[in-house]
Length: 282
Image (cartoon, rainbow, N blue to C red; front, top):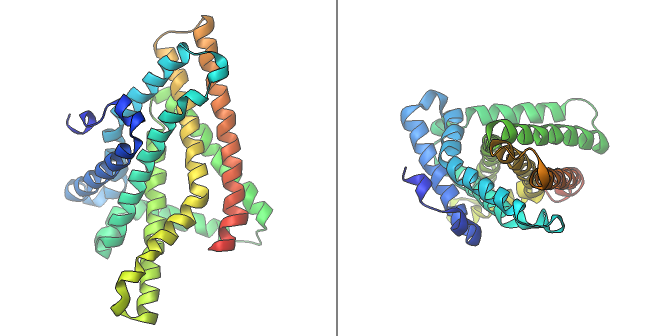
């Protein structure tokens, strides 16, 4: 296939910004195909097509990193996987930026069809937060519990389905893109009504504000999911290769445990930023 052959693993790890552009390409192609062929179910088909396009690169990267683990001493793990995590993160950012831009520029009726499931998810989240007398610490515990659940799901999806956690990454990218796009659209409408369209070029500074608002904590949160999914993927590769005994399997398990501990720490950091820092600025 053409898309899966555009970038190899080694080139992706050396030049992760290529992966960002590739993520934007995958998301854009998915947007057009989902609207063209599956308009009524476009919001879910969009995610499926992004996963389908990205799966070969993610699987090859995970396999490549698993081979690294076999040939390195334990004291160098999990630092050796930084390049692979950059690949995953840049791919996620490419998805997010491309879908946010399409959300901003496409007509309203098309946006409604394309992101209907994501909009419903955001409304449900906002509804849960808005109900009751919620303190910051209660909100933090709710966020941490939900994010830790997603963390475990990422690991299990990767373990049972290889690069299965990619679906969760792509879904989260689409939800964040919807929130960002809605933030930008509302900001542009507000500025347009108060300032006028003569300075329309200044309105798109709202896009930068949206990135800051959702990525201040989102970077840590998504990185945590990526790390957890990567940990499950390493164990899955070891099982597929039947490395059940000896030092190889022990090193892989230790590597995966270290990555899961890192993922939990990143989740806690993301929760603290989301509850106590992001609201102070936005």
